[in-house]
Image (tube, rainbow, N blue to C red):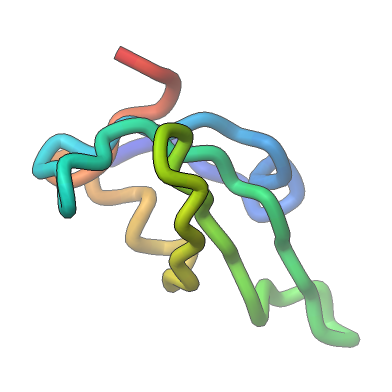
Length: 71
């Protein structure tokens, strides 16, 4: 399990262990929170193509799918 805290998501770097559309490296470009401080939106941007994907931020905790940093 990757140690991920919601308040540290913004501009964090991630490597997909199973690339989609030949995209492997991502940057969290936008994070939105509700009144209680819960994450309501997490946008990942692929570094090469600049495509954006909205994901559930808790997916980043899955060490079989994501690795923190660019590897």
